Length: 112
Image 1 (cartoon, one colour):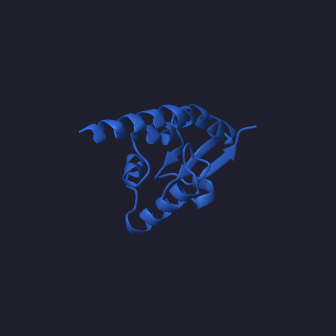
Image 2 (cartoon, helix red, strand yellow):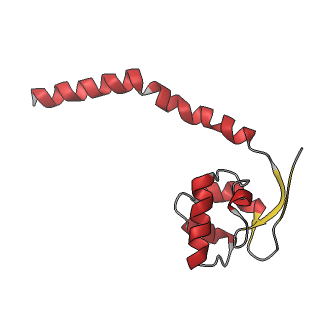
C-alpha cells in the first residue's frame, strides 16, 4: 500500500511539473488552424482530391487520406456521413459542414 501511494505521489508531481505544457498545448493548437487559408465555396467529399480536402477545418494529410480510403468503399450519401471516418467527430463536422456537399461539384476558392 505504501508503495502504491509513493508511485501515485510521484506520478502526480511529474504531471504537475511536466504535464503543464501538455495542458497548454490545446490552447496553442488554434494558431495552426488560424494559418490555414479560409475557403469559399463547396467541397464535394465524394470527389475532392486530398489537397482539396485539406482545406477543410481540422483536416490534415492523414484525415484527408482516411476520407479518400473510406469513400472508395462507401459513398457518402449525406454530409453527416463524414463522421464515420476515423478522426472526424461531431465537433469537427460542425466546423466543416458549411463547406462540404455530396451533390454539387467541388467549387472552392481561397479567401484573401
